[in-house]
Image (cartoon, rainbow, N blue to C red; front, side, top):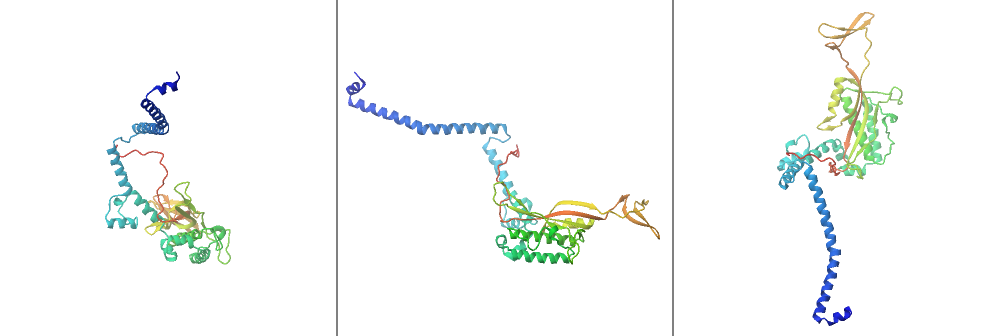
Length: 354
């Protein structure tokens, strides 16, 4: 008797029940293969990830207590965003870095105020001529640059500073793709040279060249713009630097005043490079130190010896110096650009209070 005959001898209800059981078995297998198995794989991955995180936390100084972690998170967020401020305090924090109370500021506010101060050197000029930064970046033209170059050249000649394209690095016909950057370079030169002359420093000249009708050109040059990006994948820089190099001569006291004038409430032209040389003093016959500590250089002249005091306490004093400096202005093409990086931090900081 074969299987089919045996099934036929079973009651109809039994055959129906057997068919249902078989169908349920098939459905169970299908459900297990296509639904339970993927979920089990996901569970296994999550379990493995949990074990890995748990092991990492056990080996780190971070606590496993959720309440403690929430407390730390709240502390860090407070440091990042600052204390809750009144409307007046918020207005002060949004104004500038010199009027804001540092105790009310979080790291975000501080970073934004520093960026605002560092890039606000020419805001007034931009607002007066273009209305806002966006118009300045998109609408600055070659004609405007040429006009500014001619006015800059004339202004500097009035300060006894002569521009020579081979030294300066630009002339009135220079045509770079971004016109606003050319204008920013000229504005930077104006400000740096003006502060040098206001502090009674002479801008050194190049003895090997002569500009027809104007004399020897000055050692003032614009250097290539430096872009800054937060991440290598960024398409546009968030900050631009415009360095200017010049060589100045004068007294050490006046040079110190010039350096101090480069950073103030209304100015941010930090000096990023400096080479300082003492001028070669005239050759003296001898050096004499008086009993009171005064140092004299003794020169022999047809009328006798001449003493010139050049220091005290046995130390020679060099009054005049020659300095080569590089000063930079900064510009943010898009105001409000984040000043924080989104890159993942590789080295994890140790939590506070643990």
